[in-house]
Image 1 (spheres, rainbow, N blue to C red):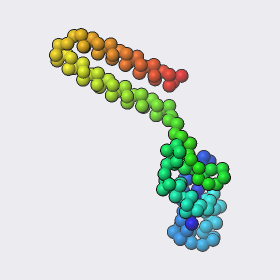
Image 2 (image 1 turned 90 degrees about the horizontal axis):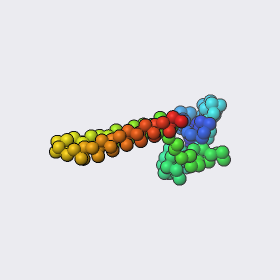
Image 3 (image 1 turned 90 degrees about the vertical axis):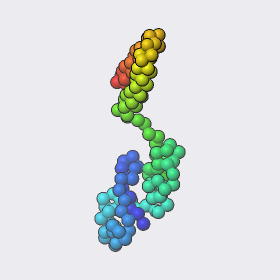
Image 4 (image 1 turned 180 degrees about the vertical axis):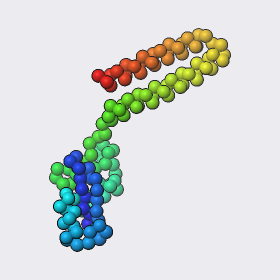
Length: 135
């Protein structure tokens, strides 16, 4: 038998196991008094990911009915979104820089001018994307 503790959103935050963490009713009661809930082996398997990642790919939480239910879809934070924009910007800039260096080595002024325009557009898009997140 498992005793699991869940946060207010239904996420499992701790587990204790019969015969390991508690061996009698008194020890078990000490855990249940702290908010641990008796959980079947089948339900526990969902909470620890042994039954897949659910419909949203984010695992399972304890539903209002006390049973495993699909965890909500992951919603990236503003910081996560900013980091994704920064990472993509750096990758795109690095690629343009390589092309520009190659064009410079080959004395291709027309391509260098085109790449400068692309870089300006990339910088503009980066600034706009970051500004939209901060709005």
